[in-house]
Image (cartoon, rainbow, N blue to C red; front, side, top):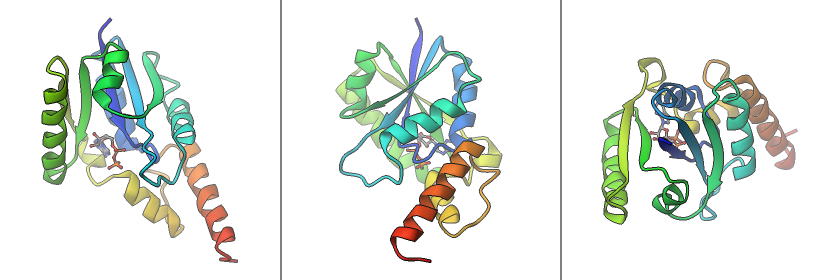
Length: 167
Ligand code: ADP
């Protein structure tokens, strides 16, 4: 079976991620969306919440699996018998970091290749952090994330406001 892995933080998933998932899934028997659970980072959503939101957003695509992982991506890829890593590129600013990661992963496991896909132009400005920033100020994010994600973001920031005594 031809398996690829699409890794990321997905905090939360956006239409930019979903576009890469839909376009790349056509070329593989199985695409595993791998949510990085990094205890050193402070994500807005837990790994479990991020996995849930992705599962909810990819229900219409049959050959997708969603899992979280810790540690090295190449180790996870080996366990899953995947030899291809999918990455999305939005701008030149993504390139340097992605090149470094791809070369390091190649050094760690020479059998694993990284495939890069260009963003669709309409999502080239879109990142999870920009979505979180807009949502935190109550801006409209309807065209940026699936509606289930929009609702979760709204709830999350409302809860934060209440906890911080914002009302
Ligand atoms: P971010 O927090 O910047 O959105 P992630 O770690 O969640 O990043 O991203 C996972 C992968 O998805 C990376 O390969 C990233 O370059 C890619 N990606 C994120 N947003 C987009 C987009 N709008 N278009 C194409 N690829 C994207």
